[in-house]
Length: 152
Image (tube, rainbow, N blue to C red):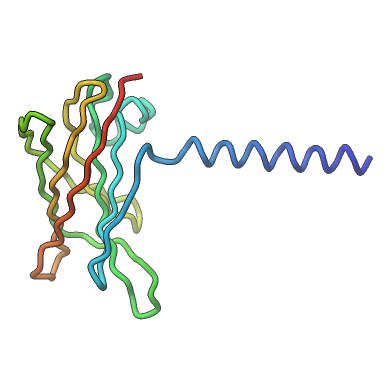
């Protein structure tokens, strides 16, 4: 009886862990700017469910990637909270073809993030140059990162 109960608990824990791992973005990082942090992730649009894509007016298709940027501010307790602001940027491939990114703000409850879509070829290394500016903050927060997506 105890063996069956333990087996059930371990099975549920394994299923929960697997679900958490597959829900992680394809690539997520951040850069610290003192009281602010800029977080980013890059993923193929096909990772979105059709319902999520439709709800956020995003095209879900092979060869279309999504860049997700969040501006976070540390409060007095050191806890990060999302803040609004402006985000702009561009992506370039290895032969320096530049694609400007049209970011738009999405707010869901307390979460605020900025999404842009771009076209890519499978296996193409893209370099992103993004500038975030939190509302009420005069200094730009520039980040540069590279990522390669593969079509599924």
